[in-house]
Length: 223
Image (cartoon, rainbow, N blue to C red; front, side, top):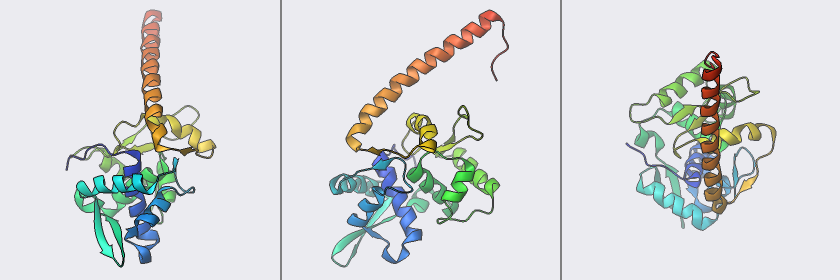
C-alpha cells in the first residue's frame, strides 16, 4: 500500500506494539495504559516522549484507519495489536528492524543487530544490511534510508521513512550517541521541524557556495 506520512507518536505506538508482542507476549495485545507507558518509556527510546492518553488514542485511531493497528475487546478494556507485516507485506525480520528504528532513532547496522535482538536474532551484521537494503529498494516505496556518514563517525546510520523526510533524525543522531536523550513534548515538535527546515536551507546554500568556489579554484570535485 502507499502509506501516508505518520507522526512521531504514531510511529512510536507502532514500534511499541511490535516490541511488546515479543517481550511481553502474556499481556499482548496491549491496553491503552500499557501502550502509553511503552511510548513514554525512558529507556531504549530516542527521543523520550511524554504523550498523554488522549494523544495516544488519537494516534491509535489513525493507525486503525490505515489497518496498521487492530482493536480487540479483552475483559473490560480495549486492547490493541499491530498489523504491520500484513499491511506492508514485510517479513518479520524487516518489521523488527523498522520497529527498532522507530523506537531508538538513527542507528548503524551493528547497533540495529544488537538493539533488535529481542525482536529477531540476526546471524550477523550482513544479514541486517541485507534486509535494510531490501527495505530501501522496496517497490511500493522505500521504508528506510542510509544517511551519509557524519563527521567523526566510522559507519553510516539508517533511519526509517515512515515519518517522511529524515532531516530531524539525521541531525540529532550524533548528539544522541553521546548524550542522554531529552524528553520532547509533542507540542514542541512543530517548532523543531521548522528550525531544522531553515537550517537545511542554509546548509544547502553553503554547500552550493563551496562547490562554486572549488570550481573557480580548479579543485577536483569533492568525493
